[in-house]
Image (cartoon, rainbow, N blue to C red; front, side):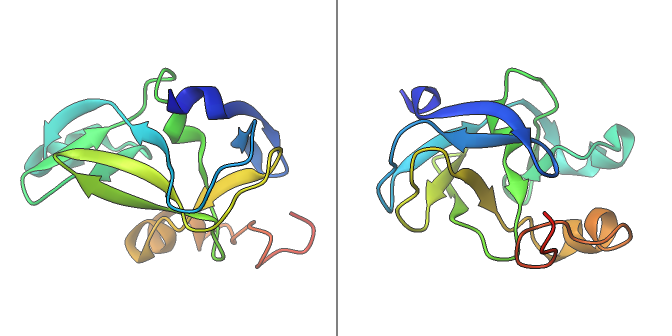
Length: 129
């Protein structure tokens, strides 16, 4: 099970998701889960955990049971997201070592709306992160 490969703990920029074991490149790490909402209704939710699934649906991943919500943004990530069969997966872009924080790039729209105004805190952009 994917959740056995990860643990939520404190990172330098808040809570983060960390590998508990080495994760091979291409491995599915964890599924992004939550309530499906119509894409047209996302403005009502105003959440930071909204993830577009397709042209019709968005997943609201605000529930703390959605461990994938703890994957932080990075401009030089070690993971990426893929959508298969109406599911969103966080997948290793390269080998991730045990103890390493799992990160992916949140995308331009999210970055511009939420991250850019306060400054990116990822390791690439902030040497103190």
